[in-house]
Length: 332
Image (cartoon, rainbow, N blue to C red):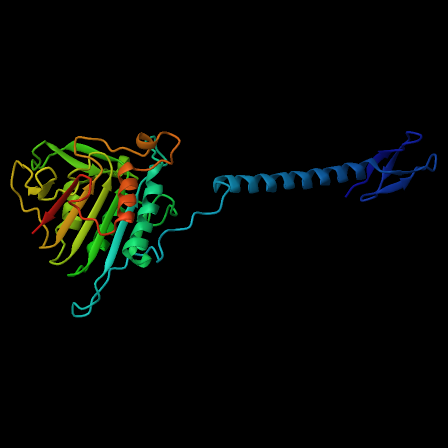
């Protein structure tokens, strides 16, 4: 390194300073002074340290902000997210209780909802506390899961877990399908709906991947039901009256099952199993939330889910006939 120059603080005389020299005696007045070059180096070092500290602090704040500044949300699923389908030995195993619960908030779109997360957690607790569903046999799909997880309610993941729900079902099994999110009506291109519309549920990525129609839901979780298997479906969404496309509709006024009118009679039925669906509203209607019942000061959630849980908790043996909800059913 080359020598630098510094100026005496007393006599203002300039002189040469060897490298890495902190103090030096002025050759003119003999005053000992700190070198200006040394001061500049220290100042630069302090500036670099200060800048690095600033960057580290900023990175830490950004990291905390990115994670919401709170602890990660604990998954509602007890097992690994890897899909594993059950296998029975010679068709013999204990009766199974299994549930697929889906809550879609659309939190990254203009279609955002607040209630579904509240709904699905409450319904999960109802199944475990009142009906003894084992938590290991309950799959909950929400957007609170890690983005790469197959527990996120994308169209593909929902379709995969439809298969998981009914896979290897046997007589005595009790299955539950629950959905809280958006529902829509779309033109019926199969010409099997008398009103000309299919009812559909909207997965988290429905804008890119599309909706899941009543035809697809019926084919995925209704038709595979074996004799002695029961599926209870609860759909808290708009236009959800016949979203499972079941063969019979229960007329509460006349207390009897009726066949919905279809343009063409098809083969929509279970494989001798039983499927019953409770919907938040009729096909032509929109679903209500708790704000419409209790005002805006209440916690947001689906009105049908809230009242269903409250009624069932008070009377766990309540029948469908005694229920005050609109529901659809199928049996063969």
